[in-house]
Length: 588
Image (cartoon, rainbow, N blue to C red; front, side, top):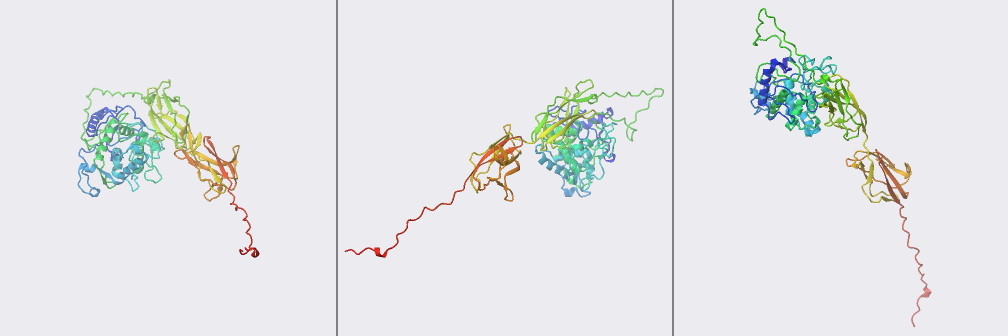
């Protein structure tokens, strides 16, 4: 990793203040538009990162700790971009701007496929693939210049430094080394630099191979897209775009750096062969170097031996002992003071399948003395065999406690799976016992059924009913969609056994059926039964329809006797027989 990353961003220290200001100033000069959102976040001219957590998952995809490339895009526009054919010819002279605008073919394809997938899954997010390219450039130099195989998997793992608290955040192992090969501490992994604990819930299968691999650029790009699009953010607005980028890495410098590359890529890019993409420079100043700009929290370790070309501090004067620099005692963060979590008055969590839960989970962070702790990140995770999610479609949400120590989770949206599941609340960055909340999803139900028509349902014995039975289901006055129902031709109002005479339905083979199961109302709460037929029994019959939730409707069916064949008008009067002797005598 070091061979490609070179001098990458580490945590701030006094020795890096000048470089920090230089990069911040250059970021500000190249970043598009405003970099202050409607929450008052700092601009590039402020060298310190924001102290307030972002609105969703302030733990960030990268853990806020891994270093990243700090090279800024060239000041020269990449337009006009050479054609793919020109850019792929080895030795073709291109300008610096044109070279930086080259994105390896497979990596570029992964970004564009992720954009297409998100346009369907979360159309309101308006995710541009150029944003994924900007983050991919900053996080891994486009997968180290496109060093990936035909399936999009990096030819060797891309790993950040181990997060052991030595110059970076302290994140102990969460994946038993499955992704980063380290069973003691976590490291950011892959082209989009996800920490294993985030990948565990954010990972996606972007290339359809049945695996979620953070070292696969298709999987990582799709996961990053979903991560940036959670909680209903619209990335076509500057405020939501800023929030999304800050949630990836909560640093003002990071925000401006990504915005600079986003603007640069929007002006034009071209495709280059895999493995030939430009890599950020490993040293040097200005646009080609990766200045060691501060990242949120922590300190940079003391610099090692000087390298050629750098100044060396003068030796101490003889006879005067060197006074050791006192080591500052770190000020405890709010997270350090949390002793336990408590439920903050959460009501019973229950909802019907497909509905939003009307109650939300509230958790309070407290010290050992019971005092509220604000500005603490609480992570809520949905656990169990359920398709219920938080608003935005995710199973994990991170919320910052307010001054009262309370974090309120986003609303839950019930899926179609019924039963109980658990939502667990934990403190991000501290090992304290979490709080589990039980939630229940019940089957869709209706409490009222009514016919949509008023025509009497009649039929002649041996015939078929002209009208089909249609009913409307409601629950609490609202249309009840997708509610299970059963229709049965019963013996009588007091006897629900199946009648063996009178009207009947037909199955797919044309056989007589007097009970229908597996019926469901449509999106408008309507249920239209199949055509009814009648045998040769006349009389009044009953059709009973029942739904989940107890709604029942009994419909009367009338079968009249078939008319008898038309009788003849009666015997014809006998015709007088001809009598030869009765012929008229001749007139006189």
